[in-house]
Length: 273
Image (cartoon, rainbow, N blue to C red; front, top):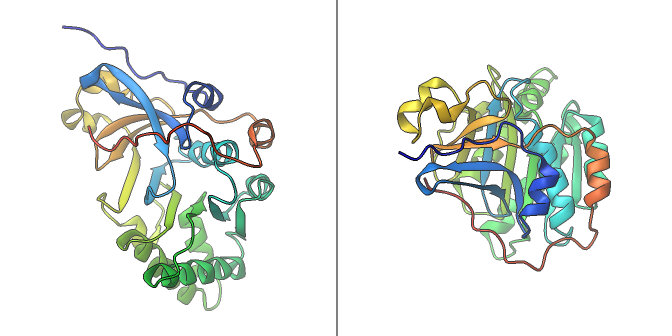
């Protein structure tokens, strides 16, 4: 039988952006062994909730940086608003330089998180009525840390409950809001972090040998020790995320297109196996 080439163990974001034009953001490569090919793993507005779980050394945090660079390069501020709830002040500084960020929340500051929740709650109310806005992405680089900091403050339990309620509402009802969040192994990410994969919530989880029976191609294609190697649930697809960037600020500066977007047709999102 034909032996298919495995997913590469190292995927550069710059190369993906150069090789795969479009209005979406390529975040890695998807293994499609039944077609003997690899294709980009796309993100674009309207994709819903994407949660990425893994240890700090697993490579999943690179997802956030790739998304920031790709949005700067491909999507105009008039076509996408960001709410960034970030633990990294350096990452926050780069994100706010792009012109997309409506609310920049430091995850260590409950007042910042409360302000972000106010905006999301208002958008959910607008979407339920007749005043739906444009696409809005809420981005967390450490969802569990955000929640833990809230619970550590006087009265923070109420804010943590609000955060849980808002995020589960985004996952369960039709809205113009997307969420991308990192959840580190062993951390309590609240109600959303307990959501099973399904139509409203997709998970990227580290590939393990236990995944072999349900992924076409088996363990040899999983390369379970590779940084950034994940399984996308519920589809059961193997994904190699892009490598860590040497400098997020330099990557955004090199790619930032203030008018944003591309004249190419938007990419077809991979959703099945």
